[in-house]
Length: 342
Image (cartoon, rainbow, N blue to C red):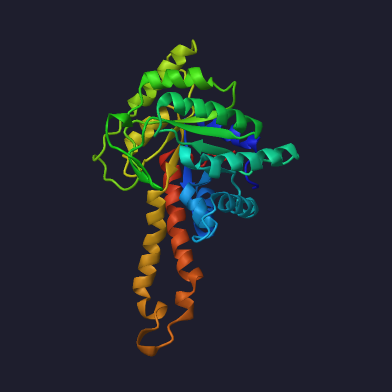
């Protein structure tokens, strides 16, 4: 199917919220990992979200070029073509963008999408993330207000982060301390600044102990009940009942999370969960296995010529794609989106 239009994306998010499931948002950095994500979603019978980080966008432009906008648009253009061959709907998203990269990443991409929409087309991306976790909350929300207006004009959804995700991703480092836990006051401030959809749709990454990167279960304490408390605080601010879920929530830094923690987060309104570390490993592990099993074929040892069929990047690339696709299916099953494609 074609990449999701803004209307299809809105329907995807609405169905996830109504059906108490969430979409994996799979980070990619190449055509191979993009193809793996597409196959995984198709195999799971799930719509999904595929995203690029600032580092992934730089890499897609060429590792010596490092042009985030060029890499992003090239990724989007390629995705728009290849996604047509899969029977599920896919939305494109840009991941964490800190303040110092807004002018070189999100703002020009929003401008490019606005130009396409003004000409009768669809935006390049269906959503963009502003990561204001490293600035004071007031400044975070002030910038979010500006970006939300731009996103609305481009028919794009904005994602924000309220709180701090620990660990490191693309050079953005978050300390592991009490700031990992968003407060009800943070939730109320967000509603007061951005509204509840009337100023443009936004996704909210509230933090409840999340950490980027590799960690084992138990190393960091996730507290999904924080999401419930935030929803209740926002509902009270809006004059809604305690069981309302005003926020469209995002789960960041989920590697190593226990199934019951993921399930609880979805119960409390998470409709998007970022998956990167686990799928990176799922791609690379079969490649390492291929290289070790075919050592004398991929290397020209002792003057021999090697085996072209074994060192052809398509050979080991297929193994990596299959491994990553299988991990995407697992993510869909854990988030209950498997089999939900409309």
